[in-house]
Amino acid sequence: MPESDCLFCKIIAGEIPSTTVLETDTAYAFRDINPQASVHVLVVPRTHHEDAEELAKAPQELADVIAAGVAVARQEGIDQTGFRLVFNTGEHARRTVFHAHLHVLGGEQLGLFGRPGH
Image: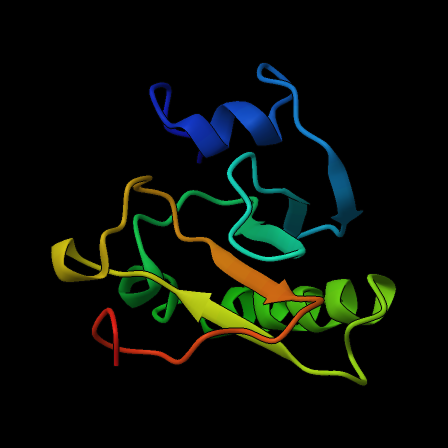
């Protein structure tokens, strides 16, 4: 069920414009407006889930989001060179939108994970 004040629910509903990359019955993928890599696409479940922890309670939807992320990587031509799939959950992960979303990143050599500078 969509949340009336959720940015991503509004994007899915077409109330806020986005650049569509892929659509399935259960997931919607669009370009990030502040890309952190040459390819940076967000994949969101069409059903509102606050974060990855909540989405994990709906294992089929979680699997669909991940499958859509892999399909995006293939469609964007980064499946052979490498890509990253990332969920940010909680304050320390610096999550800014409270609708579960998978980041698909690639298209260039990515930095290491973890603490800045490490």
